[in-house]
Amino acid sequence: MGQEFPAPDIIVAGAGAAGLSAAIALADAGFQTLCIGRLDFGAHGRTVALFEGSLRFYRALGLWPQLTPLAAPIETISMIDDTGAAIRARTVTFSASEIGLPAFGANIENNALVEALAGIAKARPNLTLHEGFLNDIAFEKDSVRATAEDGTVFEAKLLVAADGRKSLARGKAGIGARAWTYPQVALTVFLAHQQPHRQISTEFHTRSGPCTLVPLPAKDGAPNRSSLVWLMGSADAKRRAALAPDALAAEIESQIHGFLGTMRLDGQPGFFPMTGLRVGRLAGHRIALIGEAAHVFPPLAAQGLNLSLRDTANLVEILEDARRLGRDIGTAATLAPYSVERRSDISVRTLGIDVLNRSLLTDLIPVDFLRSAGLLAFAMIGPLRRAIMREGILPHGHLPRLMRPQPSGPAGTNEPALRRTRPSRPQRLT
Ligand SMILES: Cc1cc2nc3c(=O)[nH]c(=O)nc-3n(C[C@H](O)[C@H](O)[C@H](O)COP(=O)(O)OP(=O)(O)OC[C@H]3O[C@@H](n4cnc5c(N)ncnc54)[C@H](O)[C@@H]3O)c2cc1C
Image (cartoon, rainbow, N blue to C red):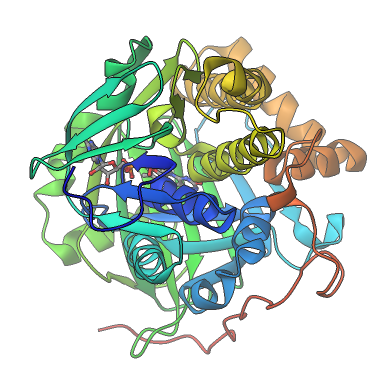
Protein backbone atom coordinates (compact mmCIF):
# COMPACT_ATOMS: atom_id res chain seq x y z
CA MET A 1 0.00 0.00 0.00
CA GLY A 2 2.90 2.40 0.67
CA GLN A 3 0.79 4.56 3.07
CA GLU A 4 2.76 6.45 5.75
CA PHE A 5 -0.32 7.64 7.64
CA PRO A 6 -3.26 5.90 9.33
CA ALA A 7 -5.47 3.89 6.97
CA PRO A 8 -8.38 6.17 6.03
CA ASP A 9 -12.02 5.50 6.79
CA ILE A 10 -12.97 7.81 3.93
CA ILE A 11 -11.27 8.94 0.71
CA VAL A 12 -12.41 12.28 -0.72
CA ALA A 13 -11.67 12.43 -4.46
CA GLY A 14 -11.05 16.03 -5.62
CA ALA A 15 -9.48 19.01 -3.87
CA GLY A 16 -11.71 21.82 -5.14
CA ALA A 17 -13.73 23.97 -2.73
CA ALA A 18 -16.33 21.21 -2.27
CA GLY A 19 -13.82 18.38 -1.74
CA LEU A 20 -11.60 20.29 0.69
CA SER A 21 -14.59 21.52 2.71
CA ALA A 22 -15.99 17.99 2.90
CA ALA A 23 -12.62 16.51 3.88
CA ILE A 24 -12.26 19.00 6.76
CA ALA A 25 -15.82 18.38 7.96
CA LEU A 26 -15.42 14.58 7.84
CA ALA A 27 -12.06 14.71 9.64
CA ASP A 28 -13.54 16.97 12.32
CA ALA A 29 -16.36 14.46 12.77
CA GLY A 30 -13.67 11.93 13.73
CA PHE A 31 -13.33 10.00 10.45
CA GLN A 32 -9.76 9.34 9.35
CA THR A 33 -9.90 11.12 5.99
CA LEU A 34 -7.66 11.20 2.92
CA CYS A 35 -8.29 13.90 0.31
CA ILE A 36 -6.74 13.21 -3.09
CA GLY A 37 -6.63 15.92 -5.73
CA ARG A 38 -4.45 18.43 -7.48
CA LEU A 39 -4.92 21.99 -6.26
CA ASP A 40 -6.27 23.99 -9.16
CA PHE A 41 -6.16 27.80 -9.27
CA GLY A 42 -7.57 28.24 -12.77
CA ALA A 43 -10.88 29.88 -11.75
CA HIS A 44 -9.78 33.30 -13.05
CA GLY A 45 -11.97 36.18 -11.92
CA ARG A 46 -14.38 33.79 -10.19
CA THR A 47 -15.93 34.18 -6.76
CA VAL A 48 -18.49 32.29 -4.75
CA ALA A 49 -21.27 34.12 -2.97
CA LEU A 50 -21.83 32.04 0.15
CA PHE A 51 -25.13 32.38 1.97
CA GLU A 52 -26.04 32.13 5.65
CA GLY A 53 -26.20 28.30 5.73
CA SER A 54 -22.68 28.05 4.28
CA LEU A 55 -21.35 30.64 6.72
CA ARG A 56 -22.84 28.61 9.56
CA PHE A 57 -21.08 25.52 8.15
CA TYR A 58 -17.67 27.23 8.14
CA ARG A 59 -18.32 28.78 11.57
CA ALA A 60 -19.27 25.40 13.03
CA LEU A 61 -15.94 24.02 11.78
CA GLY A 62 -14.11 27.04 13.23
CA LEU A 63 -12.88 28.11 9.78
CA TRP A 64 -14.65 31.43 9.52
CA PRO A 65 -12.02 33.55 11.34
CA GLN A 66 -9.52 32.57 8.63
CA LEU A 67 -11.96 33.17 5.78
CA THR A 68 -13.55 36.44 6.96
CA PRO A 69 -10.69 38.69 5.82
CA LEU A 70 -11.12 37.30 2.28
CA ALA A 71 -14.87 37.98 2.15
CA ALA A 72 -17.17 40.95 1.55
CA PRO A 73 -20.69 40.95 3.02
CA ILE A 74 -23.72 41.07 0.72
CA GLU A 75 -26.42 43.10 2.47
CA THR A 76 -28.72 43.87 -0.45
CA ILE A 77 -29.53 42.19 -3.77
CA SER A 78 -30.95 44.31 -6.56
CA MET A 79 -32.42 42.82 -9.76
CA ILE A 80 -32.87 45.09 -12.76
CA ASP A 81 -34.69 44.15 -15.97
CA ASP A 82 -32.33 45.16 -18.78
CA THR A 83 -33.86 42.88 -21.43
CA GLY A 84 -35.44 45.71 -23.38
CA ALA A 85 -38.66 43.63 -23.37
CA ALA A 86 -41.96 45.31 -24.25
CA ILE A 87 -43.21 44.25 -20.82
CA ARG A 88 -40.41 45.42 -18.57
CA ALA A 89 -40.18 43.95 -15.08
CA ARG A 90 -39.99 46.20 -12.09
CA THR A 91 -36.64 46.48 -10.26
CA VAL A 92 -36.70 44.26 -7.19
CA THR A 93 -34.55 44.89 -4.13
CA PHE A 94 -34.04 42.33 -1.38
CA SER A 95 -32.52 43.52 1.92
CA ALA A 96 -31.11 41.07 4.46
CA SER A 97 -32.44 43.28 7.27
CA GLU A 98 -36.00 42.36 6.16
CA ILE A 99 -35.34 38.79 7.38
CA GLY A 100 -33.40 39.87 10.47
CA LEU A 101 -29.90 39.25 9.13
CA PRO A 102 -27.07 41.78 8.81
CA ALA A 103 -26.13 40.18 5.47
CA PHE A 104 -27.37 37.42 3.15
CA GLY A 105 -23.85 36.06 3.07
CA ALA A 106 -20.42 36.87 1.77
CA ASN A 107 -18.58 36.94 -1.53
CA ILE A 108 -15.15 35.33 -1.62
CA GLU A 109 -12.59 34.74 -4.38
CA ASN A 110 -12.68 31.12 -5.52
CA ASN A 111 -8.90 30.65 -5.74
CA ALA A 112 -8.34 32.35 -2.36
CA LEU A 113 -10.94 30.06 -0.80
CA VAL A 114 -9.29 26.91 -2.22
CA GLU A 115 -5.86 28.12 -1.08
CA ALA A 116 -7.12 28.87 2.45
CA LEU A 117 -8.98 25.53 2.71
CA ALA A 118 -5.92 23.62 1.48
CA GLY A 119 -3.76 25.32 4.13
CA ILE A 120 -6.31 24.41 6.81
CA ALA A 121 -6.60 20.82 5.50
CA LYS A 122 -2.84 20.30 5.66
CA ALA A 123 -2.80 21.22 9.37
CA ARG A 124 -5.96 19.33 10.39
CA PRO A 125 -5.84 16.26 12.65
CA ASN A 126 -7.35 13.10 11.09
CA LEU A 127 -6.79 14.51 7.59
CA THR A 128 -4.15 13.88 4.93
CA LEU A 129 -4.01 15.78 1.65
CA HIS A 130 -2.40 13.77 -1.16
CA GLU A 131 -1.77 16.08 -4.11
CA GLY A 132 -2.29 14.42 -7.49
CA PHE A 133 -5.03 12.87 -9.61
CA LEU A 134 -6.70 9.53 -9.10
CA ASN A 135 -6.13 7.21 -12.05
CA ASP A 136 -8.35 4.31 -11.07
CA ILE A 137 -11.02 3.35 -8.55
CA ALA A 138 -12.33 -0.14 -7.79
CA PHE A 139 -15.38 -0.78 -5.65
CA GLU A 140 -14.92 -4.04 -3.73
CA LYS A 141 -17.40 -5.76 -1.42
CA ASP A 142 -15.86 -4.48 1.84
CA SER A 143 -13.81 -1.49 0.67
CA VAL A 144 -13.01 0.91 -2.13
CA ARG A 145 -9.50 0.98 -3.64
CA ALA A 146 -8.21 4.16 -5.26
CA THR A 147 -4.99 4.38 -7.29
CA ALA A 148 -3.26 7.76 -7.45
CA GLU A 149 -1.31 8.89 -10.50
CA ASP A 150 1.98 8.20 -8.67
CA GLY A 151 0.92 4.56 -8.36
CA THR A 152 0.02 4.64 -4.64
CA VAL A 153 -3.04 2.57 -3.81
CA PHE A 154 -5.34 3.64 -0.99
CA GLU A 155 -8.17 1.67 0.57
CA ALA A 156 -11.10 2.92 2.62
CA LYS A 157 -14.67 2.10 3.58
CA LEU A 158 -16.17 4.94 1.55
CA LEU A 159 -15.22 7.27 -1.29
CA VAL A 160 -16.78 10.74 -1.42
CA ALA A 161 -16.69 11.89 -5.04
CA ALA A 162 -15.91 15.61 -5.27
CA ASP A 163 -13.94 15.27 -8.48
CA GLY A 164 -16.04 17.70 -10.49
CA ARG A 165 -18.43 17.51 -13.40
CA LYS A 166 -16.45 14.85 -15.34
CA SER A 167 -16.12 12.72 -12.19
CA LEU A 168 -14.01 9.59 -12.70
CA ALA A 169 -15.46 8.15 -9.49
CA ARG A 170 -19.06 8.56 -10.68
CA GLY A 171 -18.27 6.76 -13.93
CA LYS A 172 -16.39 3.92 -12.19
CA ALA A 173 -19.38 3.41 -9.87
CA GLY A 174 -21.67 3.13 -12.89
CA ILE A 175 -23.80 6.09 -11.84
CA GLY A 176 -25.40 7.64 -14.90
CA ALA A 177 -25.40 11.40 -15.53
CA ARG A 178 -27.25 13.58 -18.03
CA ALA A 179 -25.29 16.66 -19.12
CA TRP A 180 -26.53 19.50 -21.33
CA THR A 181 -25.22 22.83 -22.57
CA TYR A 182 -26.57 26.38 -22.69
CA PRO A 183 -25.76 28.79 -25.53
CA GLN A 184 -23.87 30.97 -23.06
CA VAL A 185 -20.39 31.62 -21.72
CA ALA A 186 -19.78 33.32 -18.35
CA LEU A 187 -17.21 36.10 -18.42
CA THR A 188 -15.79 36.52 -14.92
CA VAL A 189 -13.38 39.20 -13.75
CA PHE A 190 -12.53 41.32 -10.70
CA LEU A 191 -13.02 45.04 -11.16
CA ALA A 192 -11.70 48.10 -9.35
CA HIS A 193 -14.16 50.96 -9.70
CA GLN A 194 -14.73 54.58 -8.82
CA GLN A 195 -17.99 54.41 -6.84
CA PRO A 196 -18.53 52.27 -3.71
CA HIS A 197 -20.70 49.14 -4.09
CA ARG A 198 -22.38 49.77 -0.71
CA GLN A 199 -22.52 45.99 -0.06
CA ILE A 200 -25.12 45.64 -2.83
CA SER A 201 -25.06 42.83 -5.37
CA THR A 202 -26.58 44.20 -8.58
CA GLU A 203 -27.98 41.85 -11.20
CA PHE A 204 -28.91 43.18 -14.66
CA HIS A 205 -31.14 40.70 -16.49
CA THR A 206 -30.20 40.88 -20.16
CA ARG A 207 -31.31 38.84 -23.20
CA SER A 208 -28.07 36.81 -23.05
CA GLY A 209 -28.47 36.12 -19.32
CA PRO A 210 -27.66 37.99 -16.11
CA CYS A 211 -24.78 40.44 -15.78
CA THR A 212 -24.05 40.54 -12.04
CA LEU A 213 -21.71 42.61 -9.90
CA VAL A 214 -20.98 41.31 -6.42
CA PRO A 215 -19.04 43.19 -3.69
CA LEU A 216 -15.42 42.27 -3.00
CA PRO A 217 -13.28 43.48 -0.09
CA ALA A 218 -11.04 46.52 -0.57
CA LYS A 219 -7.35 46.02 -1.13
CA ASP A 220 -4.34 48.34 -1.29
CA GLY A 221 -4.77 50.79 -4.14
CA ALA A 222 -8.32 49.56 -4.87
CA PRO A 223 -10.82 50.63 -2.18
CA ASN A 224 -13.87 49.76 -4.30
CA ARG A 225 -13.88 46.29 -5.86
CA SER A 226 -16.52 43.94 -7.27
CA SER A 227 -16.56 40.66 -9.11
CA LEU A 228 -18.42 40.31 -12.39
CA VAL A 229 -20.32 37.33 -13.79
CA TRP A 230 -21.67 38.21 -17.24
CA LEU A 231 -23.45 35.56 -19.30
CA MET A 232 -23.24 36.09 -23.05
CA GLY A 233 -23.34 34.23 -26.37
CA SER A 234 -20.17 32.41 -27.43
CA ALA A 235 -19.41 34.79 -30.35
CA ASP A 236 -19.50 37.79 -27.98
CA ALA A 237 -17.35 35.92 -25.48
CA LYS A 238 -14.77 35.11 -28.18
CA ARG A 239 -14.64 38.74 -29.30
CA ARG A 240 -14.36 40.04 -25.72
CA ALA A 241 -11.62 37.52 -24.87
CA ALA A 242 -9.50 39.19 -27.55
CA LEU A 243 -10.02 42.75 -26.23
CA ALA A 244 -7.30 44.72 -24.46
CA PRO A 245 -8.03 45.16 -20.71
CA ASP A 246 -9.03 48.83 -21.06
CA ALA A 247 -11.38 48.08 -23.95
CA LEU A 248 -13.01 45.23 -22.02
CA ALA A 249 -13.40 47.45 -18.94
CA ALA A 250 -15.08 50.09 -21.13
CA GLU A 251 -17.55 47.49 -22.50
CA ILE A 252 -18.41 46.34 -18.99
CA GLU A 253 -18.88 49.95 -17.85
CA SER A 254 -21.25 50.56 -20.73
CA GLN A 255 -23.18 47.30 -20.12
CA ILE A 256 -23.89 48.29 -16.51
CA HIS A 257 -24.80 51.86 -17.49
CA GLY A 258 -21.77 53.27 -15.64
CA PHE A 259 -23.43 52.96 -12.23
CA LEU A 260 -20.10 52.20 -10.50
CA GLY A 261 -18.24 54.99 -12.33
CA THR A 262 -15.04 54.37 -14.24
CA MET A 263 -13.51 50.93 -13.78
CA ARG A 264 -10.45 48.85 -14.58
CA LEU A 265 -9.81 45.11 -14.60
CA ASP A 266 -8.16 43.90 -11.39
CA GLY A 267 -6.78 40.58 -12.65
CA GLN A 268 -7.14 38.15 -15.51
CA PRO A 269 -10.65 37.48 -16.88
CA GLY A 270 -12.03 33.94 -17.12
CA PHE A 271 -14.46 32.45 -19.68
CA PHE A 272 -16.60 29.46 -18.65
CA PRO A 273 -19.05 27.69 -21.01
CA MET A 274 -22.41 27.14 -19.31
CA THR A 275 -23.55 23.58 -18.76
CA GLY A 276 -25.97 21.61 -16.64
CA LEU A 277 -25.75 18.11 -15.18
CA ARG A 278 -28.04 15.77 -13.26
CA VAL A 279 -27.14 12.38 -11.90
CA GLY A 280 -29.24 9.23 -11.70
CA ARG A 281 -28.55 8.79 -7.98
CA LEU A 282 -26.38 10.50 -5.38
CA ALA A 283 -24.96 7.43 -3.68
CA GLY A 284 -24.32 3.73 -4.13
CA HIS A 285 -22.16 0.93 -2.78
CA ARG A 286 -19.12 2.68 -1.16
CA ILE A 287 -19.69 6.01 -2.93
CA ALA A 288 -21.47 9.32 -2.24
CA LEU A 289 -21.43 12.20 -4.74
CA ILE A 290 -21.13 15.83 -3.68
CA GLY A 291 -20.48 19.17 -5.41
CA GLU A 292 -20.22 19.38 -9.17
CA ALA A 293 -19.81 15.60 -9.39
CA ALA A 294 -23.49 15.58 -8.33
CA HIS A 295 -25.02 18.74 -9.84
CA VAL A 296 -24.06 21.52 -12.25
CA PHE A 297 -26.09 24.54 -13.39
CA PRO A 298 -25.38 28.12 -14.50
CA PRO A 299 -24.33 30.57 -11.77
CA LEU A 300 -27.69 32.34 -11.46
CA ALA A 301 -28.67 33.00 -7.84
CA ALA A 302 -25.23 31.76 -6.69
CA GLN A 303 -26.28 28.28 -5.64
CA GLY A 304 -23.49 25.82 -6.65
CA LEU A 305 -21.11 25.69 -3.69
CA ASN A 306 -23.90 26.55 -1.24
CA LEU A 307 -25.67 23.39 -2.39
CA SER A 308 -22.41 21.40 -2.15
CA LEU A 309 -21.91 22.41 1.48
CA ARG A 310 -25.47 21.30 2.23
CA ASP A 311 -24.60 17.94 0.59
CA THR A 312 -21.64 17.64 2.94
CA ALA A 313 -23.50 18.72 6.10
CA ASN A 314 -26.17 16.11 5.35
CA LEU A 315 -23.66 13.35 4.56
CA VAL A 316 -21.61 13.98 7.72
CA GLU A 317 -24.75 13.61 9.83
CA ILE A 318 -25.75 10.33 8.16
CA LEU A 319 -22.25 8.90 8.58
CA GLU A 320 -22.09 9.95 12.25
CA ASP A 321 -25.42 8.21 12.87
CA ALA A 322 -24.19 5.06 11.11
CA ARG A 323 -21.01 5.00 13.18
CA ARG A 324 -22.97 5.48 16.40
CA LEU A 325 -25.12 2.47 15.49
CA GLY A 326 -22.02 0.41 14.66
CA ARG A 327 -22.93 0.18 10.97
CA ASP A 328 -20.57 0.00 7.99
CA ILE A 329 -20.40 3.61 6.67
CA GLY A 330 -19.96 2.54 3.05
CA THR A 331 -22.88 0.26 2.28
CA ALA A 332 -25.63 1.21 -0.12
CA ALA A 333 -28.15 0.80 2.71
CA THR A 334 -26.28 3.26 4.97
CA LEU A 335 -26.00 5.81 2.16
CA ALA A 336 -29.56 5.45 0.79
CA PRO A 337 -30.98 8.23 3.05
CA TYR A 338 -28.36 10.64 1.66
CA SER A 339 -29.68 10.12 -1.87
CA VAL A 340 -33.27 10.56 -0.74
CA GLU A 341 -32.76 13.56 1.55
CA ARG A 342 -30.66 15.59 -0.91
CA ARG A 343 -32.80 14.86 -3.97
CA SER A 344 -35.44 17.58 -3.64
CA ASP A 345 -33.08 20.46 -2.73
CA ILE A 346 -30.89 19.63 -5.75
CA SER A 347 -33.85 19.13 -8.12
CA VAL A 348 -35.57 22.37 -7.11
CA ARG A 349 -32.36 24.43 -7.66
CA THR A 350 -31.47 22.73 -10.95
CA LEU A 351 -34.98 23.18 -12.37
CA GLY A 352 -35.53 26.70 -10.99
CA ILE A 353 -32.26 28.00 -12.41
CA ASP A 354 -32.89 26.32 -15.75
CA VAL A 355 -36.34 27.95 -16.04
CA LEU A 356 -35.08 31.39 -14.96
CA ASN A 357 -32.14 31.25 -17.38
CA ARG A 358 -34.26 30.09 -20.34
CA SER A 359 -36.89 32.74 -19.58
CA LEU A 360 -34.24 35.40 -20.18
CA LEU A 361 -33.03 33.83 -23.43
CA THR A 362 -36.44 33.88 -25.07
CA ASP A 363 -38.21 37.02 -26.29
CA LEU A 364 -41.66 35.42 -26.33
CA ILE A 365 -44.13 37.95 -24.94
CA PRO A 366 -46.02 35.46 -22.70
CA VAL A 367 -42.71 34.40 -21.11
CA ASP A 368 -41.69 38.04 -20.58
CA PHE A 369 -45.12 38.63 -19.05
CA LEU A 370 -44.75 35.73 -16.60
CA ARG A 371 -41.22 36.76 -15.62
CA SER A 372 -42.32 40.38 -15.10
CA ALA A 373 -45.39 39.30 -13.11
CA GLY A 374 -43.19 37.11 -10.91
CA LEU A 375 -40.77 39.94 -10.20
CA LEU A 376 -43.65 42.35 -9.59
CA ALA A 377 -45.07 39.92 -7.03
CA PHE A 378 -41.66 39.76 -5.29
CA ALA A 379 -41.50 43.56 -5.28
CA MET A 380 -45.03 44.13 -3.96
CA ILE A 381 -45.80 41.24 -1.63
CA GLY A 382 -43.66 41.44 1.51
CA PRO A 383 -44.34 37.93 2.93
CA LEU A 384 -43.62 36.36 -0.48
CA ARG A 385 -40.42 38.36 -0.82
CA ARG A 386 -39.25 37.31 2.64
CA ALA A 387 -40.11 33.65 1.97
CA ILE A 388 -38.09 33.75 -1.28
CA MET A 389 -35.15 35.36 0.54
CA ARG A 390 -35.15 32.73 3.28
CA GLU A 391 -35.48 29.87 0.78
CA GLY A 392 -32.65 31.35 -1.34
CA ILE A 393 -30.15 31.36 1.50
CA LEU A 394 -31.20 28.19 3.34
CA PRO A 395 -34.03 25.86 2.31
CA HIS A 396 -36.70 25.02 4.86
CA GLY A 397 -36.91 21.54 6.39
CA HIS A 398 -34.44 19.50 8.41
CA LEU A 399 -31.22 21.41 9.15
CA PRO A 400 -28.15 19.24 9.61
CA ARG A 401 -26.04 19.92 12.70
CA LEU A 402 -23.38 21.87 10.78
CA MET A 403 -25.99 24.32 9.49
CA ARG A 404 -27.89 25.04 12.69
CA PRO A 405 -27.54 28.52 14.18
CA GLN A 406 -25.00 28.67 16.97
CA PRO A 407 -26.17 30.21 20.23
CA SER A 408 -23.10 32.37 20.92
CA GLY A 409 -23.05 35.23 18.39
CA PRO A 410 -25.36 38.22 17.98
CA ALA A 411 -28.86 37.42 16.70
CA GLY A 412 -28.75 35.58 13.41
CA THR A 413 -25.10 36.31 12.74
CA ASN A 414 -22.79 34.31 15.01
CA GLU A 415 -19.23 35.41 15.59
CA PRO A 416 -17.07 36.65 14.11
CA ALA A 417 -19.06 39.11 12.07
CA LEU A 418 -18.13 39.97 8.53
CA ARG A 419 -16.02 43.04 8.15
CA ARG A 420 -17.99 45.66 6.29
CA THR A 421 -15.95 47.55 3.74
CA ARG A 422 -16.15 51.18 4.76
CA PRO A 423 -17.80 53.12 1.91
CA SER A 424 -15.00 55.11 0.41
CA ARG A 425 -15.15 58.36 -1.46
CA PRO A 426 -15.34 58.03 -5.21
CA GLN A 427 -11.88 57.39 -6.67
CA ARG A 428 -10.63 58.40 -10.06
CA LEU A 429 -9.12 55.39 -11.75
CA THR A 430 -6.38 55.89 -14.23
C1 LIG B 1 -18.89 31.56 -13.24
C2 LIG B 1 -19.27 30.79 -12.00
C3 LIG B 1 -19.72 31.48 -10.89
C4 LIG B 1 -20.12 30.77 -9.75
N1 LIG B 1 -20.60 31.47 -8.67
C5 LIG B 1 -21.01 30.78 -7.58
C6 LIG B 1 -21.52 31.48 -6.45
O1 LIG B 1 -21.59 32.71 -6.43
N2 LIG B 1 -21.93 30.75 -5.37
C7 LIG B 1 -21.85 29.40 -5.34
O2 LIG B 1 -22.23 28.78 -4.33
N3 LIG B 1 -21.36 28.70 -6.40
C8 LIG B 1 -20.94 29.37 -7.50
N4 LIG B 1 -20.43 28.67 -8.56
C9 LIG B 1 -20.24 27.22 -8.45
C10 LIG B 1 -18.94 26.92 -7.66
O3 LIG B 1 -17.85 27.60 -8.24
C11 LIG B 1 -18.67 25.44 -7.58
O4 LIG B 1 -19.81 24.79 -7.08
C12 LIG B 1 -17.50 25.22 -6.65
O5 LIG B 1 -16.34 25.71 -7.25
C13 LIG B 1 -17.33 23.81 -6.20
O6 LIG B 1 -16.91 23.02 -7.21
P1 LIG B 1 -16.39 21.55 -6.93
O7 LIG B 1 -15.34 21.55 -5.87
O8 LIG B 1 -17.53 20.63 -6.80
O9 LIG B 1 -15.73 21.24 -8.36
P2 LIG B 1 -14.36 21.75 -8.95
O10 LIG B 1 -14.05 23.12 -8.51
O11 LIG B 1 -14.43 21.47 -10.41
O12 LIG B 1 -13.32 20.80 -8.25
C14 LIG B 1 -13.18 19.46 -8.65
C15 LIG B 1 -11.75 19.08 -8.35
O13 LIG B 1 -11.60 17.70 -8.65
C16 LIG B 1 -10.36 17.55 -9.29
N5 LIG B 1 -10.37 16.30 -10.05
C17 LIG B 1 -10.92 16.03 -11.24
N6 LIG B 1 -10.66 14.77 -11.61
C18 LIG B 1 -9.93 14.23 -10.61
C19 LIG B 1 -9.34 12.95 -10.40
N7 LIG B 1 -9.42 11.97 -11.31
N8 LIG B 1 -8.64 12.75 -9.25
C20 LIG B 1 -8.52 13.72 -8.32
N9 LIG B 1 -9.05 14.96 -8.48
C21 LIG B 1 -9.74 15.19 -9.62
C22 LIG B 1 -10.19 18.81 -10.14
O14 LIG B 1 -8.84 19.03 -10.45
C23 LIG B 1 -10.75 19.86 -9.19
O15 LIG B 1 -9.74 20.39 -8.36
C24 LIG B 1 -20.04 29.36 -9.71
C25 LIG B 1 -19.59 28.67 -10.85
C26 LIG B 1 -19.21 29.37 -11.99
C27 LIG B 1 -18.75 28.61 -13.21
